[in-house]
Amino acid sequence: MRSFLKFFFASFVALIVFSIIGFFFMLMMIGRLATAEKVVIGANGVLVVDISQSFNEQRINDPFRSYYSDEPGQVPGLYDAVRLIKKAANDDNIKGIYLKTDGNGNGYASSEELYKAVIEFRKSKKFVYAYAEVMPQSAYGIAVAADKVYLNPKGAVDFSGYSLTMLYLKGTLEKLEIQPQIFYNGKFKSATEPLRETKMTEANRIQTTAFLNELYGNFLQKVSRARGIDTATLHQYANEGSIQFPEDALRYKLVDGLKYDDEVMDEIKRSLNLKGEEKVNFVSLGRYDKAEGFSDASGNIALIYAQGDIVGGSSENETTIASETYIKIIREARQDKDIKAIVFRVNSPGGSALASEGIWRELSLARRSKPVIVSMGDYAASGGYYISCMADSIYAEPTTLTGSIGVFAVLPNMQGFFNNKLGVTFDNVKTAQYADLGGTHRPLTEKEKVIIQRSVDSIYVTFKDRVVAGRKLSAEVVDSISQGRVWTGLQAQKLGLVDRLGGISDALACAARMANLPETNVVAYPKPVNPYEKLLRNLGGEIRTSMVKEELGEQYHFYQVLKGLKRITGGVQAKLPCDFIIQ
Image (cartoon, rainbow, N blue to C red; front, side, top):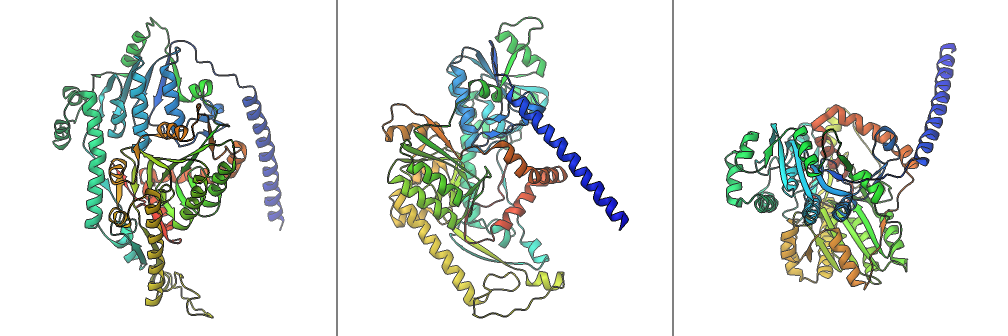
């Protein structure tokens, strides 16, 4: 008993001390933020755009970032980054852009928006230099927008073509004696393939080959325009493995020079007419945002960001589209008389079909009173397309992955696993035949399988009806282009699933035209959450995630795949495969 009391009081004292320290640390942080000076850019600035950074759809507020780094506490979102690059073109204090291309933390459509912003910036006649020690293909696709592309003399540039790898778990489930009971509609609906196959089905291979070639073709065309090399020759370079060393990249004119970092800095200094030890005034996007950024707190067009998996219920997670939360957001914008149009930015591979229906319904009500325009990001597929199809107009990038009009349900039968692997058995009493329908402790009966398949089929019909009504296409046409098939934005436009190719700015311009607005002022949703509340609420989860990432390293993606497969067992899903690995 004495040792217990000693341990208890020691823990209690430690808790009090930790709380006091935390309290004073919080006061110190608040004081630092309160006295933070306004960021001043100064003359001869060079905007640093580091594309290895992942640009979330909506800006992220991190009040502690300024404490442990020189960067402000706000991380610009994708649309912010695009606007800042465009603004820099007309800013006399910004003389050029330094494009850091050692990686690319963004998807294909997001990269397309950044690429176009840099191309537009070059019309100002200001310089753009891209540099990397090791440049992956995804980064090179943006680097070619620069005036000059430089590579470290001992570095590398990847120019090997695109590949897509899928992870299959059927063999693992068989070893564990877990039977995935799968129901789906749409012959191309490949989200359940990892559970029921050991390799791609022929239908999935056909659709994957088609959209991967479209993505690769877009990449080759951008490189061709920038480097003056025809696409057939570029493909030959990749097919024959011609680019193995930095000298190869220079010889085949994929880069403009092989330089070390200090040599690139010297060239930037010459462009600025700096001499001797004068330093370059590098300005990160975060600092530029702090000094010259945009306020989206009020306006006449609601820009609603919808990023991540579609789920039921409510959530303040920026990368989750929770139906209850988004119904409230859309309703607020719908009922606000100052809001004249809505731009719904969708970057989602889908999720719960029921949650998608709820969001679709609220957007349909909004469309009765004001224009609703959809802007598609990297993904707007399956459930992501479900919540998009009712819009007055749909914009997508050529490299957006969309469509995938199909649904599925997965109910695992874990009886063999429980009985034979764990020695666990079950018994029950029920008052009706289907009272325990959906339980994982036993296999489904044939009658139960019919019930579930009918439910899946019914939701699939509803999904297609929504597309027929929203896109004003015939039922026959929609049926022929649905079946769960994934399309690129370019393909989708030709099929009538998308109206125009373009980004967020294009969608906003369309909304302004439809609402007859002489000036466009954007109000962003969801509204920012108090960063301190968010920090305290998410701290435990972020620590756990960080530990798992550190432990698994490059295998963390596969951990995410397994978590994704766990989520798809809850209800009927309208979702893309959760294990695309495109390289």
